[in-house]
Amino acid sequence: MSIIKAENLSFSYESEGAEVKVFENLNIDIDEGEFVAVLGHNGSGKSTFAKHLNAILTPKSGRVTVCGIDTADESRLFELRKNVGMVFQNPDNQIVATVVEEDVAFGLENLGVPREEMRRRVDEALKVVRMYDYRTYAPHLLSGGQKQRVAIAGILAMEPRCIVLDEPTAMLDPIGRDEVMETVRRLNREKGITIVLITHYMDEAVKADRCIVMDRGKIVMDDRPASIFPKVEEMRALGLDVPQATELVWELKRRGLNIETGALRSAGAIESILKMTRDQL
Amino acid sequence: MIELKNITYTYNPGEPSARVALNDVSLTLADGDFVGLIGHTGSGKSTLVQIIAGLLPPLGGTASVDGTDFSEYKAAAKELRKKVGLVFQYPEHQLFEETVYKDIAFGPKNQKLTEDEIDLRVREAARRVRLEDGLLEKSPFDLSGGQKRRVAIAGVVAMKPEILILDEPTAGLDPSGRDELLGMLKELHGDWCKTIVLVSHSMEDIARAAGTAAVMNGGRLVMNGPVEEIFSRGDELRSMGLNTPQITRIVDGLIKAGLPLEKGIFTVEAAADSIEKLVRSKR
Image 1 (cartoon, rainbow over the protein chains, first blue to last red):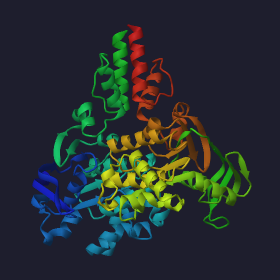
Image 2: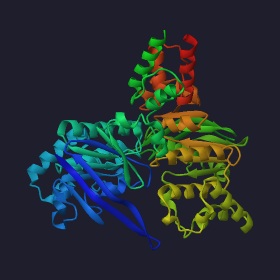
Image 3: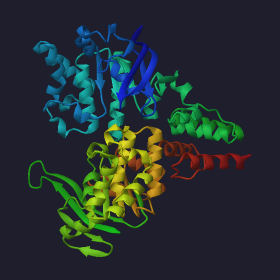
Image 4: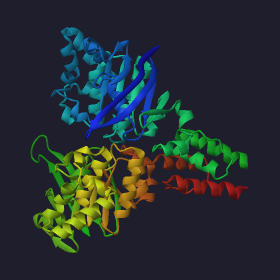
């Protein structure tokens, strides 16, 4: 069942009197429960696409439907945003309250959710992102990864069907990145929430079910990570990277060694290399 | 050359909220060094960087600049500020002038250089950060994110600091933007800036650009040495919430499985070289 559908979506903006096209006739279909990573160099149109999913931007032409709601339908904006949460790069710009649990409750207060129900949802959301022990903390005492998880809890409390994350780990240290990615994966696997993750980190993208690669406003690849990343030269030509594990086995193959390519993670690369060395002996 | 000895710093000293940020840190930055400064959030690296740049007086410790000892940080700070250029995180948020040219010229103007010298510095800095000439008369706000970042870096580079410190300069850049920026830093190093300090969470970036690495943990400088030596201590790094590049983890895994490879390999190229050599020697 499709939850996100972009049909012939076009968007452009004006700069110095000229029209700059971000994308033209873009078609994307994402099923409920999928974990999709969107890749592309800066300026490829991926963030602009993400902003169409909860009507921060609306189509210049074409149509975007999310959870059955046309994003251009202003009368259903509230309903749309309740169903599609967004997490941005900078955790400091997303936190509004002075106490963690109040921040998580913020969206619910706006929805007019009854007091007891609100308490239940806030507690549950904080438990899911493993920040319940910090519920009475002031947000400025938290690390970047913790703040991002609080931002995610604020969205979870609204019980959305879909979460869109635009480079949520760009400002985090390695621990913070792992915490956020682990949380996102769990929400997808355990709660069936559809995830759209915009990222420059290829080691995050390999965790998705599906990768959409954008270049100059067009979709140039759309497949499983295992099919996309072994195309090392194509990825590089698009200004993107591949995980070092993938690059290593590809490089060994290029040098004429008899090795199986396609590893995405450390363990896979180690396995392929050990198999090759065993076969040679 | 800068030598910091036994530097200590505490935020809110004497209050219940007191937090030790630096605990007896000694660090030397010699001419020609390209240092990767690593540590998780709250490890003290930003505090250390501000002290190196002459922006924050430490509570204890001494500094010497080019062999001159200063018992008073205040006197050293003046020298440090002359020598050190600091590029903050997301420096493009601090652009403010009407044109790219004026923004880059702001620092050299404050150095009281002549108009001709300023012009030379601006053009050279722009060239060094790979900004096309045509962009100089544009408003910085009309540029792409990557270009804005390079304008902000050019503003510091134009002051020709002996020591250039950059705090997470690749954050938010795409892979090709990141490669370009790291390449640019390598070119600046040695001929335009004698010393570069790259603060980064990305071990891959450090592996790509730096020669040595300094690791901060809990306000202490816990490791300091050649990159290959630091990356051969993967287990210790992981215990501090840090990591080695993925390629180093793969080589470590192969060593554990019994392949006779060297420890401390940190580029895909080097890993491929040593695996290829091993396989071909067995044939």
